[in-house]
Image (tube, rainbow over all chains, first blue to last red; front, top):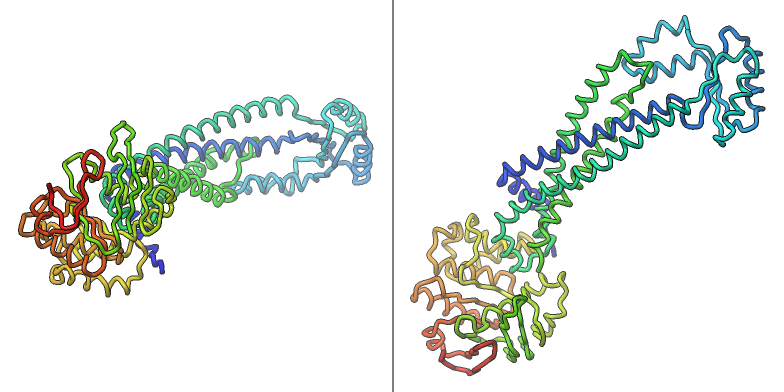
Length: 296
Length: 225
């Protein structure tokens, strides 16, 4: 029996946006700013994480070998490492793999490393993990005393602690920003939809008296909020994409020192996250502003 | 059937609008509810529309206890009613046809059925030739006829008219009242809330007088005292 066309609700939503043009624009602008700031923080956190991982901070110790070792010597070292109590996984990284990994991380700037494929400045290394941090001093002592084949043993306890506290600080700020900006955005959208609802107050009253359900009355406004969120998220995504690309290019010279998460790998998750946050904010804002008018 | 059983309504500010109203309106009846301003007429309308809930007592409409009606069932209950207001409450930017059609669209009637029924409704209220006009191009009486057509759109059993002639001239008032009588003869229960003595006296229907929140008089063929 029920024959509601989606086009009716979508049409009404667009009418609402058009009718309150200035407020709709303001909502989009505020929500967009919030999303860009949030997105930037999220990307910053993501990049810090990436660099922390690169530095082998996750209970990892890097053992760099001397140059020009024979395969037999390297295998002997590997056996020695594996026999040290407390050592978990041991992964050998050849000099060639090391360069290729750096090229992969450099993305578009991989060409900078091409010359090193023939004349590799790296030596083979081992990445090993440990479970109990208390045994790290013993593990390191044993590693350094394997023999002259060991050039460098590196763990990043101090740096890890610094980076971890930096990461925690940024996460704290990020969380606060997330809450504050979400609330601000919801309030702006509440006001926009409220205006829209107010301008259609008499229509809503008529709808209620003829027996329209709450959903029939609310849906256009909820779609209006969602559309505002969608437009804001699309613009934010483009802006963030441009900004990140710009920063990535600007920091290209530092490739090798710091690694930047390539934009290509995060584009889709970023777009989806923006749409989810934007549309959700729009829907929450609309629903709150409608509650008074659709009540019985 | 509409039944008010010892209905008391006290608003949040302490105003006692109804103070134990007992009333029974049978199916197919035509009833005037009259009374001075502030007597409680509008509260009766609000309670019947389930805009307000009783403080105590019961209202039963076709066996439905309005005080027990859940929020989600209210729209479905309202589809049993056709409402006419003093100020018409039409969509200004919609045509006469669209105004009537909207009431059907809002409750999910298929477009084919709407196309068939709306012209018939407009003919019932003698507005078949004005279907493309907008409310502002119509007289007050004509606008009220559009509101009547809309009230009939979903074929309700009960028509509730709140001061339906309050905003129109005496000649048009008679037209509207005649239409309501005609609708009543089609088998609908018609409840007219008014304070227009001349109309009440002229039509000689059942008259329920509300005074200080109570039914002070209930007479068939009565007069507005």
